[in-house]
Image 1 (cartoon, rainbow, N blue to C red):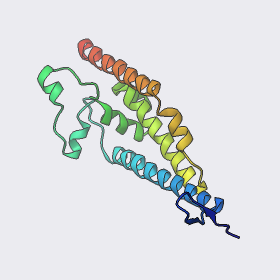
Image 2 (image 1 turned 90 degrees about the horizontal axis):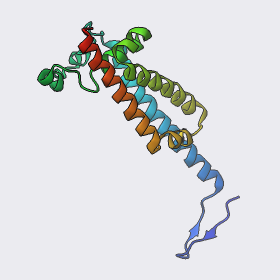
Image 3 (image 1 turned 180 degrees about the vertical axis):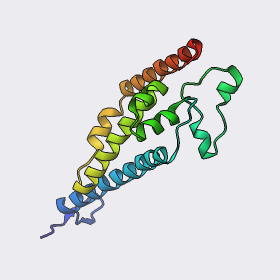
Image 4 (image 1 turned 135 degrees about the vertical axis):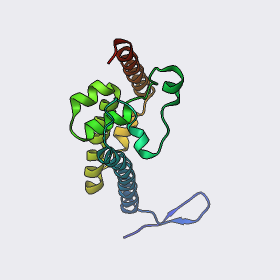
Length: 163
């Protein structure tokens, strides 16, 4: 039985805990669906692509231009090799992915885990929001920046070593 409660404006509020629970579950499933579609699209694209043997340039199969930073400096940019690393990882070549772009391999694995989690939470109606709030902290972004910076240093050192 629904019980009306008065609001500050004097109008009756017929919201019940059951309605709020259903809305919460609907929101959780929509969030999971968006993450599943987004991450699944990226991973699906990586499966569809063929990794470039040069270790970078795979993104050009999508109609994107060559890296402007690399063209100007003959040094890889911070994200050079990410698409190639994603492609290797999506095809199961984790060692090749790691040696191509370490941050790319780790990001691809993280995206695969998030895809699986979002599919599970979509089916079960569990909210991903607490986990996302835990990871969307300033220290997480600092860690991500450090990871990409170290991977960039690795890519530059590989150019100097002739690999």
